[in-house]
Image (cartoon, rainbow, N blue to C red; front, side, top):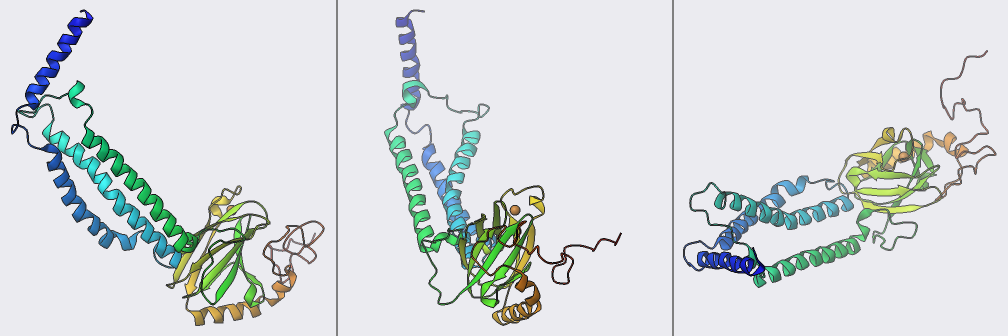
Length: 327
Ligand SMILES: [Cu+2]
């Protein structure tokens, strides 16, 4: 077959295709049918998702940060759902209308006929540009107006809360546990994360050894715990309830076992708990280094340790294990 032949053959196919297209009224306006189906599905499913599923989307609404994050997830889902539906409507419509076994299905049109549809091209570029720039604008506004959405913001947060009173709570990570110090209650240290409701908390997250990550799921706080760093993250509590804390940075052999639980309680219950814990742990607190935003791991003794090494490790103050039998 010569090039000339191939060209004339190609023209023949194009002419046939033109003949199919040039019979107006024979084929319905598929694209508008699909748009109609898509519009109806989107208009029904988007509000249904927002109203019925939205309130259950993680991480819940226990803190302002969690509520803001839930709102962001829901808005993103509401934006994504029509995109998802567009793909599935097109696929389903194609499978029904243009499957080979359907009687009277039109022949596929290719070549020149399938090229350069200006409307589709412009539509595609405009739609995707609007979606991407819209997400960029939404994300930027949400990060700025919601004060960083509660994430770890480093030692000098750019966005600080406006609350008149802020409760500082220090999160100390170490292989393989979290402990918490309350500097406004004498700097006592505890393994229980207890927080007052309706209060802005400033989490000061640090580590005594390697890199960990403080992830308080229901509070929507995720902040790196790095040695010698005071990583600040804010959240304002809105509801009482229990909190799961997990380490979210691979930190060694027992990383997976590095978790504990906390709770948000009423302000009165918190003050009662804090005061009684402060009194009950006074003997321990005296042995700790004074409260600081970071600790040098070996600041407290020649052979190292945030925890004291100059006392009997089996004393009543610091119980590290069962006392070995005297030999
Ligand atoms: Cu860890």
